[in-house]
Image (cartoon, rainbow, N blue to C red):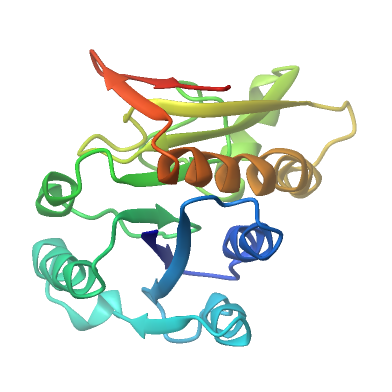
Length: 209
């Protein structure tokens, strides 16, 4: 049984999707053992506590720089014996010391179809504002492995929704969360825990059987 540690910074809707999926038996071969937040006031911590999951808080502002914060996070992940680290609305970019310690063992869900609308500055509603400004007809979400390059790791799963003429950033965000993010992230976590993801030449291949 693999230990899944979830990193959060905010409301925790993706964390809730993971918790619900685990309770339904949809995450095979792993269980959420700890939730670590970069903010002491993140509502995601309440979701974790309600589910009986251990929580830890590492406040970004209490560390002088990213290197110091990343070192503290790495120590916490090692203490928790993490087999898989999941970013679920985690708003801090960790440096290479964490990625190197957990190669292809960290995943994130991004609210767009990578390689479009991703990288530095593309987070939260900013992503959906950019999508609507460009006038694209289809958007969605991507679950990918976390590497040193922001949003640049191997893509595991992607899903799409149609962009409607009357969409606002908020309505598009909710449609993508409800129809793609909350479904794909638990699925990707289960695939990892079942050993059904293979990395070859920098690409992720999923055994769908």
